[in-house]
Image 1 (cartoon, rainbow, N blue to C red):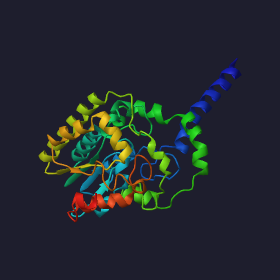
Image 2 (image 1 turned 90 degrees about the vertical axis):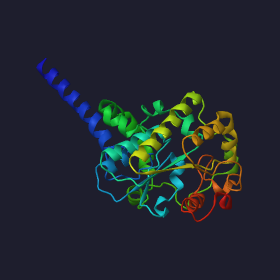
Image 3 (image 1 turned 90 degrees about the horizontal axis):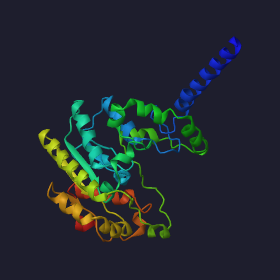
Image 4 (image 1 turned 30 degrees about the horizontal axis):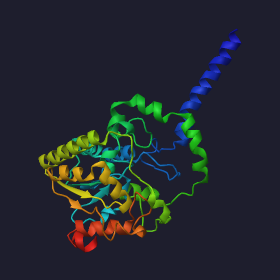
Length: 311
């Protein structure tokens, strides 16, 4: 009986070690490699990693560009008068950007400008869904709910499922440098998908988008107030959605969103049907414009061109 108990304890200890050490070693979402991110082919939790890195390291950034993965094409180091880091993370929402800015300010970070990119995805995705998503779990939620962090990321099954992707991935040697020093995710050589991909509706359905719109507009209002109180300028950018996505957005109250936004602050509007949004070659897929379009937006933000000149 004693030997059985000992063997059982050894086996239990082995299982416990595997359940901790295996996810820690594989770390598909890079949450255990905050200061040494690896390009392993799996989408990392950029929200958590970027915030954790910025909060715990001295940087010379005085401006931040927030938004979903769609602002990943904006090479923010080209913005003039600021040293801007691109905070792009998957399905980033205004309510999450608000909490990020509040965290940075509370940590003593000096902020001159806050840029946020918005479009229909800014209110048709739900913040609540991110609380159980390993790719999108927000930094502040993780800080307040450490047990959920451990339950989510110390998961051998998730690590095992990620192994085939990790093993066949060819790492970009510049990945870490770009991630920490610039933050953007879409470079100029990103391939364009086949044209027939653009018949897809890229808008998330199933959420109460009217309720979500109110939540996100309130978050932008609070972000504007927070910036004003701390001497920072809020710059809002309405992103250029591909024409198919734009047309679909009208069924999800996009015009109402813009009207609500106009009551809070001024904004740059690159949306609508124009020569950029109606040209498939300007998009790498139905959701994301390419870095060349990102440069046009930056030209406008820098005061070197007008919206109507570029779009």
